[in-house]
Length: 215
Image (cartoon, rainbow, N blue to C red):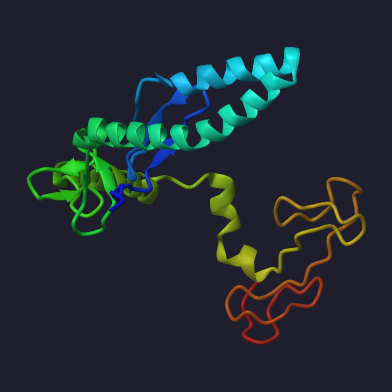
């Protein structure tokens, strides 16, 4: 009966006709280990036959064809053996998490005290430090002072006045509630509103026609 070869998906096969080499890496952090290159004697023989075929043809060419067919089966068998050896060599450096089934490196991504990978059972000290740092950043933003120019724009009367984003003549962007366009000098027409009741004010009005508040 053919012996089955157990394998995982977290590897790369770097083998060539000249020999065998494999990389295995952690599903969590990407850290990996590479086996040393193992030269293949079959590859050397095939190269010699290929060279003979190119130089002489004829009988040497037929020998190269036979050698290629023999190499196909023999190389695959040698490749399987090298693959099994590589897994046995690097398997102690990795462990499979029983919860998420991911293969992780023991060095950085395995929580030995919990018997789980650090995705499923993070280090509490690391998480606490990260949470504290995040909260500190939130506090910095919460206590930061607003620039005076921005504070002036947030006054209630500025919002009630009706702010234009662009000049009605040249469409240049306006940085604030300006009276004239800084690009073409056009007067920015905006509808004024009462700061008390919000009613629209007629041009030149000194008092609100709705509530009588002084403009």
